[in-house]
Image (cartoon, rainbow, N blue to C red; front, side, top):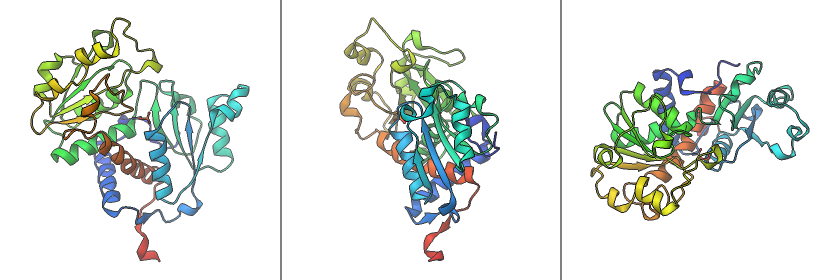
Amino acid sequence: MNKKSLLTMQDLTNEEILELLDDAKAFSYSHCDWQLPVSDQVLTANLFFEPSTRTHYSFVSAEKQLGLKVVDFNAETSSLTKGETLYDTVKTFESVGYQLLVIRHPQDEYFKELEGINIPIINAGDGKGNHPSQCLLDLLTIYQEFGHLDGINVLICGDVAHSRVAASDKEALERFHANVRFAGPKEWEREGYPFSDFDESIEWADVVMMLRIQKERGATLESLNDEDYLAKYGLTKERYSHMKDHAIIMHPAPVNRGVEIDTDLVESEKSRIFKQMHNGMLVRKAMLKKALGLEPFAREEHE
Ligand code: CP
């Protein structure tokens, strides 16, 4: 596996995480006036084996803004349908000249099958395992709000058992000394994740992060309809009124409006949900820069 691959948050030191966040901020200040020097020769492909809107198209946006040549892969019209393995599919991209791959796959730690690949891979999400680009955008959003992570109280609520966001965020937030609590249905508790009373924790939290029910990973609660779920485990207007004045709402999205969050709260004063999406494009630019080992430069200096 190429050493520049970005597969899990554990692959990154705290210093590297802070560098990525600084780069993301720099991309924010410079808007689109930055470009990688040899980008005209860099060919990248996005291999999404699972549906995605934010991650997929913010990687495309980041790649195009950096001036990379981008190809999107369609699993349904590929030779996967003829029985080709994931490894052989990825090795094919390497063999025909691609220099970086962004991959999302429903299998936990799919990348363990790709040890023999020599070009960098950025993990855009593996099963319920890891979602490093989402984690970085979440860290950036919290930093922008509070200026630090140390001592920030983060409540993550909902389908924790099936959430790669919960897994990556817990690991990284705790490394930066944030306090992380979880809440949600008993059925979706996860070993090693400290669960607490939702209503009590709403008043404790600086960040309330709601999670989607991940039905595609087998999450079901037969006994509850959407309305009941919102009342019991969702962010209602009543619970919103108990949040601290400075507290913010986050959600990795896609959002099931009216299920894990009242639809009127999605763009409420405390919500940073769409800001998270913008930050996603910025951190993905920073990840591409790191994986390609290239330094950005101000475009006008070279014109
Ligand atoms: N948050 C997230 O990963 O969204 P997508 O599934 O739309 O990429």
